[in-house]
Image 1 (spheres, one colour):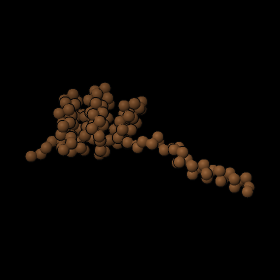
Image 2: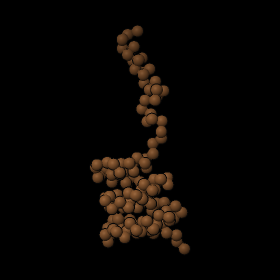
Image 3: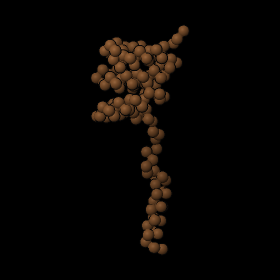
Image 4: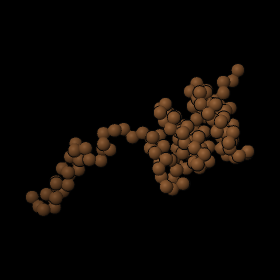
Length: 134
């Protein structure tokens, strides 16, 4: 057997055994994109990266714990208002069945927002979508 053939054989055996050894598998847990985006929003130094992560939240499904984390970010007046508005838009996608409980907190956030701002507009959209219509 030539040296090249042996090298190819070793490489193929190595590649085939990586999944069995757990290499590149991510530690056995499942990837949660919502939690990843929340972690980015809270910790990344780059504003544009945090804003992209907040955009990704709209239209996702959230656990109760993630909703609490999102509300804490939205209530944080030191947080970027674009990020806060996108989180409010994410809440609006929950619908009245799940989001109605958040309505008073969302309206409270809107009280402190400048008139005509994107944050206040997001609050108005969310209030409309989360309210029970009779």
